[in-house]
Amino acid sequence: MDLLVQRYRRERSLGRGAMGEVWLAEDTLLGRPVAIKQLRTDPDATLGQWGERMRREARLAAQLNHPNAVAIYDLIIDDDQPYVVMEYVPGDSLAHRIRQSGQLSPARAGRWIGQVAAALEAAHARGIVHRDVKPANILITPEDAAKLADFGIARSVQDVSQTQTGVTVGTPAFLSPEVARGGDPSPASDIWSLGATLYAAVQGKPPFGSGVDNPLALLNRISSEPVPAATSAGALAPILDAMLQHDPAGRPTAAQVRAALAAGDPANPAPGERTGPVAAEAGDDVEQTQKRRYPTPVPAAPRFPPPPQYGQPPQYGPPSPGYGFGDQPPPGPPRRRRSAWLVAGIVVAVLVVAGGVITVVAMTSSKSNAHDNPTTAPTLPLSSASSSPDFPSTTANPTTTTPTTHATTPKPTRTPPRRPADVPALPSSGQAVPINATPPRPPGNRSVRPYTSPEPTPIAAGQIVEWQPPGVKGDNAAAIRSITQFLVYINRQDMQNAWNTSTEIRHGPTPDAQFTTGYRTSRHYQVAFGAPRRLEPDLIAVPARFVSRQDPAAQGSPAGVTGCTYWPQYVFLVAKINGRWLDDVAGDYTSRSSVAPLKRADTVRGGQQLLPLQQRVAC
Image 1 (cartoon, one colour):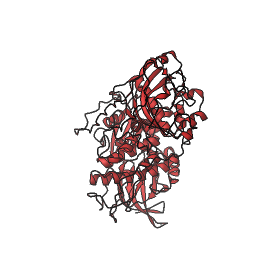
Image 2: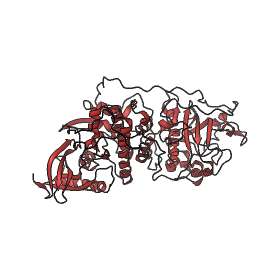
Image 3: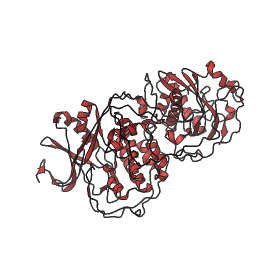
Image 4: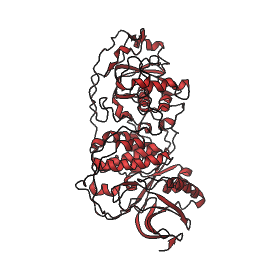
């Protein structure tokens, strides 16, 4: 076969899919094998339209030098046809492993996905978003290491038509909810896709199925339905639940996923998992095959170390009671907040190209505010979402096409959590303050981290919130989400976003010393919400109980604050400001007359207070 640019000799096809065909080739200059991806371009697009964008993406991807990422060697254009020259990985894909074994053990799957998370951690630190994380793009080497292939270069060509026509190109089964709605890919959407990949590895199929027969119906389900329980995830269930949170702000970072999935030393192959040769199959975008020369080791059960703080502000924590926050002591349960999406229309065309499926969804959406990405400081928008994927509505997103009936296989269902016996109600002035209350028992939901086992730190709403009243809707649900989101950011020690999601934002654009000192090292556990009550059109009170852990010395050793504090009857005030419900951490609303009936005598500080400090219990 003729040489490409007088250097690369193609030998055989390794696989083909929606974005192009992959060849095994020889680099005749350096005498080494390489993989060359021949990119499929829009026949109506010109080199001038996609060439510069592809070069820019190639330069970014080439800067990524990581042992768990397939290296980019070269970008060439031959006869107006683009090719990407990559590291050749002799092995098979995770997609093949899943097809062969049906389901992988949590230990093995967790080890590989943890390695891929390490590659994404390095990519996200350089501003690179993969945009198509899926089993077919994860290659397993003969040494049993996972490598993530096919970074955004291939899609940069497709993006030319995407930006012109407003359509999204991707693999439907692994798209995040926000991307399925037409939103821009982000590091958080990569985490969802990685979580869906982990789900497919342990369950044998993606969370909502492949959707090949009805991509539109699949996208509707991803956008509006809760993720079915991963019954085979074992010890991976907590981190998997966090990765598949509908709210992008509630998902862990790649660094936190990598830390949570860190595994022990490899042992022997798991029974029933193949180690022989695999042939490439249609439908896999990047497939490279070879006989396995070594048995596949299986790691020990994964450990869950505390997630490291990469690039985050110093270890601050929630304000301790009575420590410069008026009536608003340490924060409470985590909240999830999501920006509104206006879906003007969805048009789906399924193109089957050499066994690959491209789903094109034409959508118009309102731009999300900065809360959708916890790494970006949000501004104060003028409107807020009326619903959140964390608390899904029963009404599916409107579309121009009626979805067909889905799978005949019944979905696994989660057992509804039992209401804890100590969920508080809102107090009244004549009611006694609870004294020496017993801290909560271990939660019945295994996804919720008990305060007695504080590590790893819970970093998602599903890991913090033990209970909330069923059927809460509208502004009451938005109020609970706002509290929850604030606590998620505090647990992550993301002071800027915590500040932005509270009434403190009214007092300045950045956290002040009092805020950061008060919340330094604070973490929240086992939050149980009682029934909210609207006090005024712009003010809602929410009762809760929770446990906070903190280092008193790091917070200036405020009186009465211990390393573990139980609040049996905390009252959150949530205020509506510029269309958004914000946790009143600043205590701006505690003096309103509508709040007075909730205040009781405080024997520690004196007078009538919303949060009498004598209720605190060291745990």
